[in-house]
Length: 192
Image 1 (cartoon, rainbow, N blue to C red):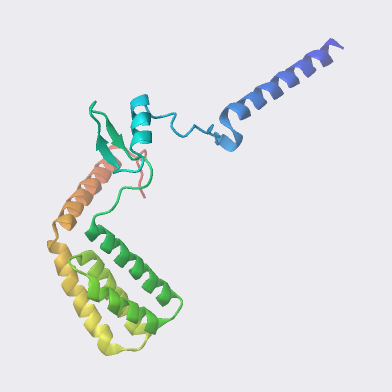
Image 2: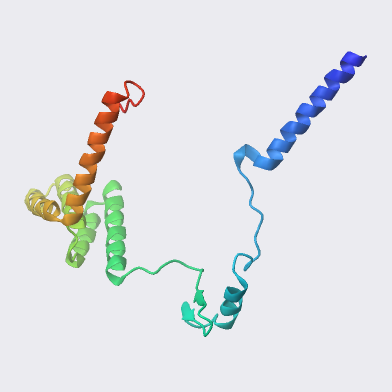
């Protein structure tokens, strides 16, 4: 009888410990966050500023030196970044048209993108490459030849771009680091 009671006590203790860990960690390790009231994380001066200046600019300095910062929304992009984002979205759309085998519409979209590219050699190279691929599928050899020639000119611009040079240097440093870690770390740092 005492053996059954001790076995039962152990089972109950294990079940309680299991339930406590599930409650503390949440289901599958996912911890449910308790909802925080709207302004609990703001200091009192910022709460007053937020209520006082809710309809005005996002950054306001009061007479006490406190700064009101609009914590809602995202940081707005610069106009050139906004245009670049739109062009990349159009490029993605042209790629989707290509994947759905709508080659003529994809080429029209690419023509629209090419008219708007200002000074982004990366985007220009990608667009000319996609144009060459689509022209090949659409059986337009003259356009394909022109696209690939323009792609190579855009590639030359990319090679001269300082962003590419910095990224290339960083990549070479990472490659050397991986190589040295592979040699000195035996099989411990096997990257293959």
